[in-house]
Image (cartoon, rainbow, N blue to C red):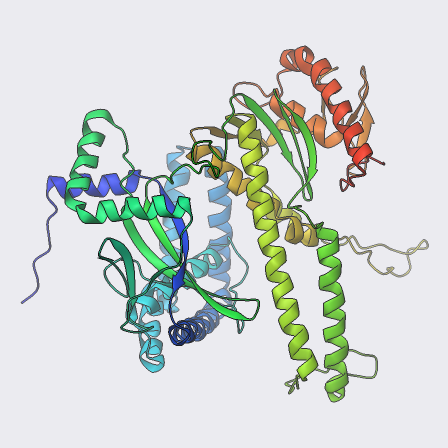
Amino acid sequence: MPRKKHVKDEYEKQLQLFHKSSARHVLVVEADMSEEMKRRAFGLADKLRICGNKLTAKMEASMDQLFRTKKYRALRKNYKRLSAYLEQHEGDKKAEAALKAVTAEMSAMQKAYHVTWDDARKYMMYLKDQAGVSSVFALTRAEDIWSGVEKVLFGKAKKLHFKKRGDLPEIRAKQNYSGLRLSLDKGNLCFKCSGVGKEAFCAKSLDKFQQSEVASIVKYMNNPKANDRYAITAMKTTGKIVDTFRPCYASLVCKEIRGKLRVFIHITIEGKAHQQFKADGVTPRHTYGTGRVGIDIGTQTIAYTSDKEVGLKNLSERGMTISHAERQERLLRRKMDRSRRATNPDNYNEDGTIKKGRKKWVKSHRYKKLQMAFRELCRKNAESRSLAIKEEVNHIRSLGNVVITEPPNFKALQKRAKPEEKTAADGSAPQKNKRRKRFGKSLRSRCPGTFQADLKSKFEVTGGSYHEVDRMFRASQYEHTTGEYIKKKLSQRMFTLTHGPLVQRDWYSSFLLYNAAADFSAPNRASCLATFDRMHKASIDMIDNIKKAGIHVLNSGIRS
């Protein structure tokens, strides 16, 4: 006899609405577990990696067959065209109906070629039985892979990516009562993971911020129903969303740091995070300013203009410069390449290129040591970039509460442009195509996309507002002295205004963004004329300080 479907009452509906409306944040603490449990956690994560790679290969093979059909390729083009059209013309009923019809046809073809979530789920269930992995963790991993499959199916991404050995996925359960369970033991937060062992483990020594976060979680877990009812009542009566600090779920992240195995617990919590304070426990660690901030985000630098300060800085730079870190990476890569060539001479052609076909690679002890050193250096550099981005975002937030910037276009900049075919002077035979490089390396090293995403998140979470100007704003071409758009070469970093002084290109773009009109469609010329003298003087002082300090700001045109 089939089980009756549960009908939600009014309270459950309100609770679901509250969960959807409330913010979430992630608390990271280190797990206090034995070395044996750590090895089990690393083993479980590696099993999930292997199962995920097998599912990725299965989905990739099925998609290859699907993309061979002309019909699906045409449907995907129509889907991209209609989606782009609806972004510019929202509410067009005819276009929405056409998009819905195209999506239905694509879904029907995906089902015929076994590229559906149900197919991915069933194959993962088969894989997890072979590997001996809990279905909770396996299905969560399958959902992550399926999100990537959907992007490829609808033309938002080109291909799926596999996880190489050592690149371990997180062990995550979507509930806090199965797989990775949260519980209270004498007022302390404890965890149990079914794939790691029966023993419970807690977090290591916490700092003041982590202690306040954990205390709020414990307070909620002591009486969850009463806290939920209070939050729902507040939402219904005042419209205010209360921070309940309900632990939604947790995940384990395995990392090898300086040769030691370490496991971190990522707890996803309902509500906004507690404010952080300095050592005295009273002074806030971060301050939030008021006013406008116009920021121009380039591939390697950022320029900003605000009431308090103007600036021009390299992105993701903190302490040791990125150029030095990149040089260390290059040196280690070259050492590894020399070692690999010395131990595997049969795998290379006479001209030094690698032979085609399947090969067996021998790794010497020297190569393994270099590989470990390279992995550790990459980890340090990634951490340094992440911290530098967060520090700069906090600084921008201290300057104002309204940030104005241009829409991100870093994916397009990352792609390599198609080379133009050149012909000989007499038109007889084509010459060799000239390489047209793009910004892939700069984007990897400086992470402007991550900076812009963090900037948006920070301003929205802390009560500020984030705005992107219209695509036709063209801050790099507008001149407020004439009110006209004058095209300039990308290499022209310093230029003289038609009826004005010499300005730095990136800073001037941020100045125009700072003076954007109320609808963010174009610069407000009257506002530009009123504020230019004061801001330009501040920009001259900024450039002088950069020269005196001997700072090399990339692609800025400033020579010290």
